[in-house]
Image (tube, rainbow, N blue to C red):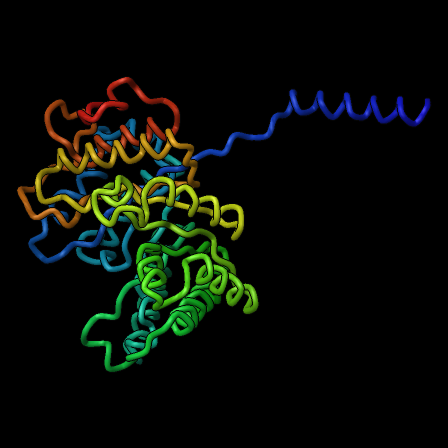
Length: 355
């Protein structure tokens, strides 16, 4: 067989395999987060356990959920060990739903001095106990460790807390976690608008430069970041506040940078700053946010759907997901899951919040 003919045959075989075994379509997961309670009387303490004592009331959402997120701060009080062992973990494990943890212990780690290290040890003890009662942790995210301003009472401890110091704290935290739990993947929540605003004012580097510096430092020390989760809002995305800073095109550019240049996963928080009006307003805005970002070509590795913990009005139940009148979080969670996973009903694509 001549060489040219041989090459043509190989090429034909290659084309055939492309049709038989096409490149897998990039899937987008959905994570659901319950923020930590604000105080002893917070109604989360009354309502959140109902998610696991009445799972039939959000069965559809559970079937589509990929990851449930707990906060380290709420491992006591709301989520007692016995309740986790007997109710929560059996349900999540049976549905093959991953468990992630929200941690603030990398943030201002050295600013907290000895207390920072004690907090980190408490977290390690909490994770150990989590495993002992039958759980496992797939991911941890570090809460805004690159962007959160230092709170007032810690400023004397680190008056010039710069990006290099923040990255050093991130590295120290990741090393501590991975010494005990090397298989846990660690990512970062970040607010890039902070970096953009400072950069535009000549006060700091661009988020691209900061992220590359972070990745390079981690790599040089044997660590790698699994994902960056963008902390934004529907108002920023739509340009109703801080126009031109982090609207949908800028979010898409950020996603492309994280996934293509940094070669790590990209997540997007679906939330609204304006939770002062009603749960209805919040639900409609986050549903619209998911729909709009998908329409412009956004394909994050995962979306984070969160309970609007900042809302100070009358409490809303978390259930049921098919509430015909109200807007419980499980209801808009299901609508978003259907939109993201291409199983949306016509009502999901509207802003009435019905599912």
